Image (cartoon, rainbow, N blue to C red):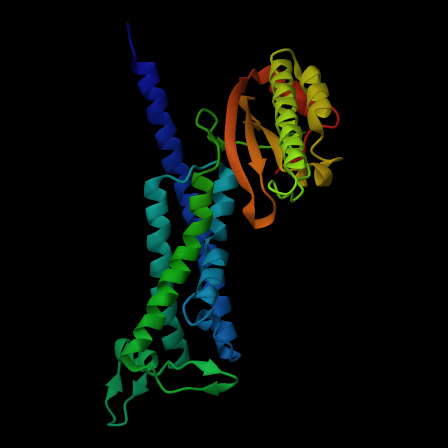
Length: 325
């Protein structure tokens, strides 16, 4: 018995990832350059984008610039199907930090092509210039600049670096959490195929003053939850038949489009997504219980049921299928 084919396949998968990684890094290098060039142009126009802070603590400007800078990594990774590995993520961090440092030096050379002279007449290098500018940072409030921060200016610089680098890794980190097909080396899609009612429109009732009404509401909620579970089980059973049957069952369980607003007002609802690979058709029906409203929304996974690739393909071809999310 030989096991070399499996080992060879693993090796080829790694080689494919390594081969595509330079394209991801190149895409990121382009957007890093564009983002930092935009910062430099804005600075020349009198707007320090990297100096935007919220409550003197959160470096929102640096985070926004970092997000723009990392967009190339995300786009290249998505379209090439290159999974963001730990090593690739480390390379992204190094490139972001290196790009920030290079941008500081290049802006210095562009602003002072012949160098800088100190009051004593001695020429100053980049590091001395960087130190002087950092120590002369001051907060601007209501159009008036305060006193120079001195050594505390390096805290502002640290915020720039952390904000830029941290904001830059948000996109790659988000991609690392997305479903991925190892066999096809492609990110999976997750269209919402059903939004199943599993709750009621909750009313505030004082159980001490109106105990019967409170109990009736609790009973209605329990009945709605049971009905929602029944619809979910019927949907999962339909997935074992064929694509058209699954499409019909999804529509009967709860269309993700037509009744979306009404269902989302309920105290509980079940989201069912078809997590699948567009290339090989391998997929799963992922169900989650969604509760709460607004900022209090909570999602709890319920089940993940494998679906035959032929059923996935037939369902995606069926009319009135779920929307992408």
